[in-house]
Length: 209
Ligand code: VGL
Ligand code: ZN
Image (tube, rainbow, N blue to C red; front, side, top):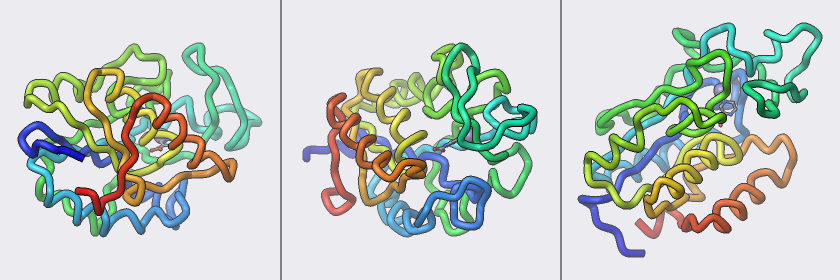
């Protein structure tokens, strides 16, 4: 893989306590990505992070819908929405980044999921593609052409961030050993990789960087 250090950025997606074992929406082995990502960051000039950052009345929380349980489906913003446990609430420790994650190189943090009316998996746009976090324009203003995506969770926020990156015209790479899936269904992670590959995203490992 050919990479220009001046024109490439690493996006660290949602490496927050609630997605780590022991957290409200724990991703199995989610903690294992932390040392891998710390090693990767040193290889980049530009590193940005995304942060899932919900108000407590967020519409994706099962607890905000009478009689509903996590995993059930509802309609939200005209889209089918999976209901989640309460997670990444603004100001809670679950919304904080993992304490071992090196933040020293971060150029910016893009927060998402702030609008209670719609969920937001991608670091670029909400799921209804109405709100824009500014991440795309930010990367373009830096002259970025190649975007490398890692973090949590592979089958949700990592996948949608990578798909939007690709559709915005960035050459986009998924770093498979620096991400882990929620796997509500056991094949969700591998299906997500297949979907990304089909969309033209390049699937690599951290050893290639
Ligand atoms: C995520 C589900 C709900 C993620 C965020 O970061 O992948 N998944 N909110
Ligand atoms: Zn969320």
